[in-house]
Image (cartoon, rainbow, N blue to C red):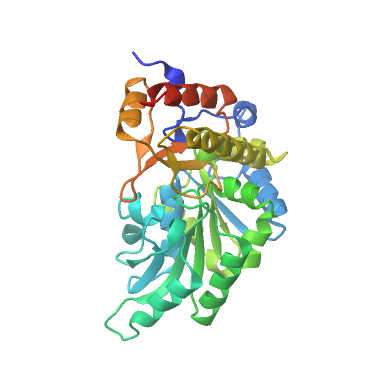
Length: 348
């Protein structure tokens, strides 16, 4: 039976609940509270999000990232519209047609781009591809931040995308499942990579950052948020005991634990990538800008690691082995993996 401590790098979803989230979950579990978000914890978490982004935004909570992304896109589109995203965007590859389902048929149009990122030029090219009434009208650009390949959209990238979207009357949705990792990587304020950069709605990821479950949908354009509460209810995403989503999130937000967690995971990824690069025959496939490391491993090394109990994924479509770091990845975990890599090398 493989040792449990060798399963850390499959996904940041495999990590547990961080102490701050756990503490506030326990705090909320005393006495009684009003349901459906009419409680002090939901108010505190919402207000803290407004403080973090330095703007008066509309905040909603739901259970999963798939629901957050799909409902957000659904709220920005009609069924005859299209959503533009990178070919490896999570809304395209891993949400089982959720955006199409919640929009009753909005077409997802895919854009290429190195490192999992779309460019302003790629967006404009897709908009210009066809403009006749027989083609689904582009309406939303969906950005994954950080991307599925472990890179981040930088301020210049976002500014250029904002300009092309303004020119073409496109709304911008940001899938921030790993938003904390992106903000920590860029070392900027959250507002700079969201509403200052033209983002209309952000799905503020929390589960991968140390929450038990739950995400926040943040509308920076409050007009766009009208009746989104009804959409949440209809979709089965209005939690009756909302405080058990909001309280642990507030615990992570109160003293910026969410950023500390993201920064730690990023640092671990860089350390891990450096160790992998030292092993003969192993190369890093993409820039390590967040908490993901994509590596090309010789087949014998990959098979040996799997046999030793390490669990990591081969990335669908792109190739390479993906190692994810999380808030509770330790230097000992990385050291142990590095030792097994060296031992598995044919020339060790």
